[in-house]
Length: 163
Image (tube, rainbow, N blue to C red):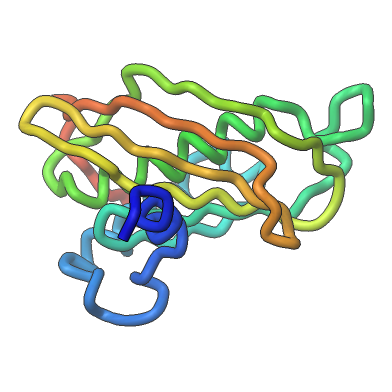
């Protein structure tokens, strides 16, 4: 298998297809609930699915998210790409929050209707940091953005509050 086909497998998360990538399902569901309870997400009403080292975040596009040229603002591209990569990493860290140290993104195509689906995957980890990539697709599975980030463990304990 070449590097290109391996990378593509990261973005077709197998956790959505069976238990093989569900090594800590309770932790994943708690992370999903934590994400959905964040005040900012009341504005976007996203969905999230987390597995072992992978995460998928999606939203339905609304005109409220547009910039002056009638397409989704880049801030939302960043949010979705970072969220998918972040939760892919935090799926592997059950005791504390992770922190985004840096995040690079590429805007590939404007979008103004349908859904935006961000798929994130951890591509490297060591005791000090994690590297994750994410890609953003439109409703037709065309890639509209890509990102990569470096994440570290914080000292902030994961605390789950009922919603």
